Figure (cartoon, rainbow, N blue to C red):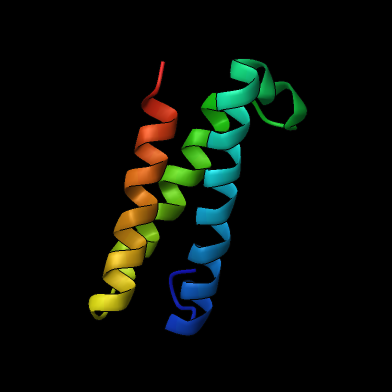
Length: 83
């Protein structure tokens, strides 16, 4: 990730943003029990997504990538800080 081309980072970010939005939608319907369908618990999922978002934000090179990467970080923070 730290050396991947920006186009790869953009696709990765878009995929992860879609994943986060799907998780958020599932939580709205089913609550915290959705975490049982993952191999890793919520805390570890949060660590993974936060780490990924930080790498992406650090790699932002222009306005489109910066906007998308920061959006992912905000979505991740909102999802995993939700109680």
